[in-house]
Image 1 (cartoon, rainbow over the protein chains, first blue to last red):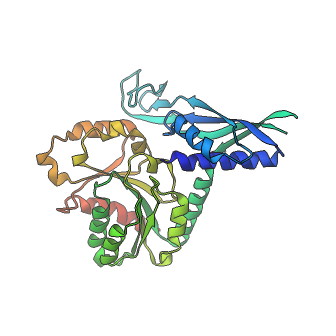
Image 2 (cartoon, each protein chain N blue to C red; image 1 turned 120 degrees about the vertical axis):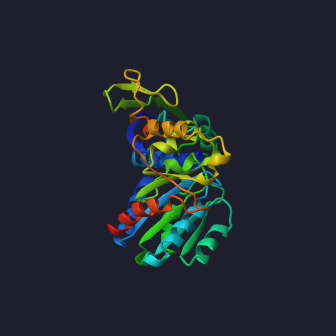
Image 3 (cartoon, helix red, strand yellow; image 1 turned 60 degrees about the vertical axis):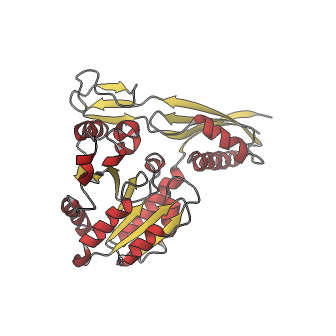
Length: 114
Length: 221
């Protein structure tokens, strides 16, 4: 359900930057989503089609780039990509691990027509 | 007509995070400690808050509570008021989590300057509340043993961001097939060394250890 508020934020940010750039129209929006960020692409797209109507962003295409989650083992300092939901260190088997990245969720760029 | 790509790099939840920061500053200025209490529906969030209020009754600690619910009910806030503490009910209108704007508005309705502790009871949900900062000092999850020992494996995100884990309803352990070692192993992989208290709000077992943790933080504010 929280994809709606998230999609509203995407629209707000995109419109703000489009206006600052004196755009007539926004054609593409590039989003980056970390693997650990609980956002469903399809759901964002669904809300987007509805809420972007009659705005400068209407019919803009959403592009999602998924970033892998990177973990570090606190015992042997091995860095590795998370492949299952829970994954001990592939080098030493330790469960003492910390998330380095994978929680990103940001708007990377927009493409506009002037 | 010219086409152009504009680089932005802006966090989608930036607006929420900025208001969360303002909330934190406001709570700090009032000299209160604050917690964001999350759990699945029925884990015992309100019972845990009531157990905390009742145990601190004679210590001159003022506790304010923000109750988040998806439906327009005042069941929880009425219980807190009946226990003698100020409470505000926030109706999220079907939304699955509280966000920082709701907290900002709720703070206006509490006697913030008089409070020593602010408790935010989030909407019962193990997914969405984890993504939205509120501005509180610590994130606390209540996991109750009837929910099963596999929850850290099934809802890993909420465990990663925690400062404290409360395992509630431990008086029911003799009647359930809850494997505590399996549960704790899952937690350890998501949040090594996480501060954990095993309690029963029914028998008050373990509540005193939790209160020691809490008293220290209230006294530092």
